[in-house]
Image 1 (spheres, rainbow, N blue to C red):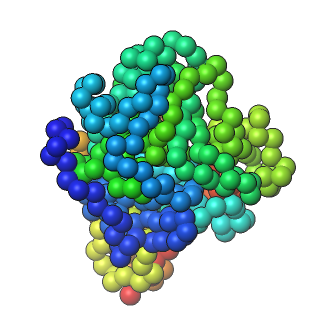
Image 2 (cartoon, rainbow, N blue to C red):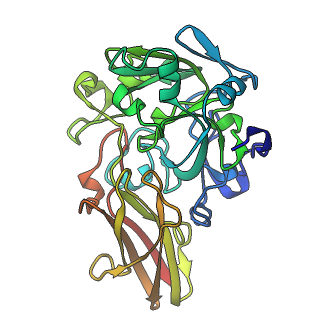
Image 3 (cartoon, rainbow, N blue to C red):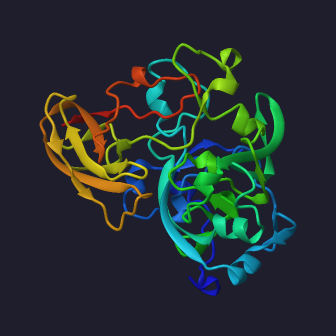
Length: 363
C-alpha cells in the first residue's frame, strides 16, 4: 500500500459505541454494528486504554539496536506488508462471568474484538537489520504510556518469544483498513501480534530490545495471566508460575440481538462472529431453546486468512414467549467451547469463552 494514499484517521464514533470508562477511555461497539462488515471500521474498533493516550508527533521514533526509526523511514527501508488479523481483548465477554462471581476489570460485552487489515513492516525485518534476530529468546517492547498495575504506575512493556517474532505477519504497523492509525489505536506506530491477546499488540512503541527471558514489566509479569477458580484474588496469586495469556482459544458470540430484550415473533435472522486463531472455524451451531436443539449456521468467511474471524448467519423461527439463544463453535481440530461460564471463571475475568447465551422475548 502506498502510504501517501492513506486516508485520515477516523476517531471513535461514540454514538455507536458502549463506553466502559471515560478516563482512561475504553469502549466497544454496539453488538449489531460489530458484524455489519467483515472489516471493522476504525471509528467503531474497540478501544482498550490502560492509561492516558501519549501525545506523540507523527515523526515519533522507535529505537531498536543502535538506530531510531520513524514510520517514514520504515516505509522507505523495508517492504510494506498488510495482514488481516482480528484483535481481541483477553477480557472480551467478561460480563458473562459476573453471574458466577464478580471479577476484576471492565465488564466487556461481546465487542472487545474487531477485525482489520493492518499495514506496516514485518518485525523480523527490523530484527534482522539490527542483527538481533539470533540474540535472545524473547523480544521486549516498551510503549510511551504509563499504566497502573496493582495501584502503582509503570511504563507499559510486554514481550513475545523470538519464535513468534519470526512470523512475518507480526508487524510494526501505522495503518488499518487503509487509514492512518488514530491516536487511541496506537499512532504513529504500534505492534500487531496476530493470534495473541490484544495486550501483546502494544501501542505507541518506543523501544524494541532482545533478552533471554520474558519482560519483567508489571503488565507482563503481574497481569494478563490465567488462574484457576480456586485463586480468588490478586493477593492470593502466584504470578511467577501462572499461565501467561498469549494465544487465545476458540470463541463465538451472537451480536444481532444482544442489546434487545423484545423482538417480533416469527422469522428472525441471527448473526455473530466466531474466531479460532491459527485454525479454521469448522462449524457454528445455534439453539433457540437453551441448547436442547441445534441448527448449523452458515459461515460467511469472506476473505478470512488464518488470523481473521468469520461471521455467521442463521435463520430461526421464534414463537411468542421467552427464548434462550445459545451459540457455540468448533474449530478444525474439533476443539469447542466450554458449556458453562462456571467452567472458565477466574478472578481477573479473562478468556470468557463459554457458550454464548442471550435471552429474548418474542411477542
